[in-house]
Image 1 (tube, one colour):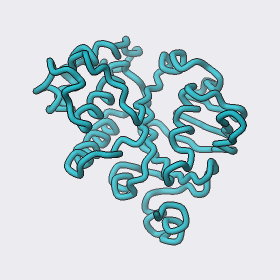
Image 2: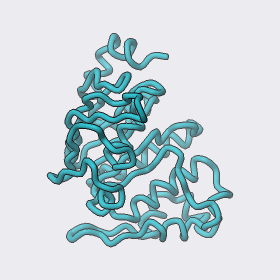
Image 3: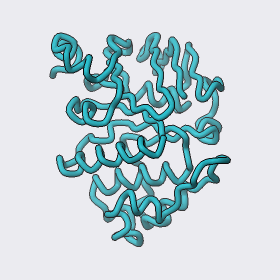
Image 4: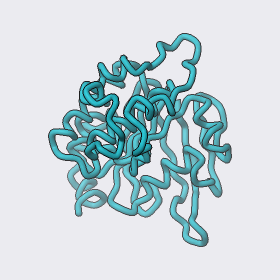
Length: 233
């Protein structure tokens, strides 16, 4: 579904990513783990075209997307849920969903507000509430729902559990599980190792812009030295 090879990116003269390589199979959940400033969000933005790569290849469903504009990448079926949410505060939940609407590709059951309300029951209860009057967890759910209205085949989730209460993080894990059962491929960036262990099939660890380890979640749980070196605070 997604293949990233030798990806490099920089902000001005500061090199942020160096030779990042990772992949996501169809229907798989892969987590990109790392401390603050490790390069997780920049990796997501470089894949999505929000940061222009200086080197490397990014292929989505067999098509080269490195260097394309974000709207072109989105039209190919790759959705992006940013860490800072970016909902429209003056628009209602329903209006925010309509902003994200795009036709579904052939053979795919389209996401509709009613399908999304079944996935996010709390949003159904506030469908006419302005986004600015929602909690952080509710806004995060709305951001994911709005992205799904674009009917993507895969989504990039940047720090979905960041700043959320434990009960909301638990609901987020249930949501990701439900999306996986729908056949959606997911790449998420995270610092919360427990959350990642619940939702992900495989993990890739990034540190100082370089990939340091990749493997299954059971293999990561069995490698305390890896967790201590790259993930402990």
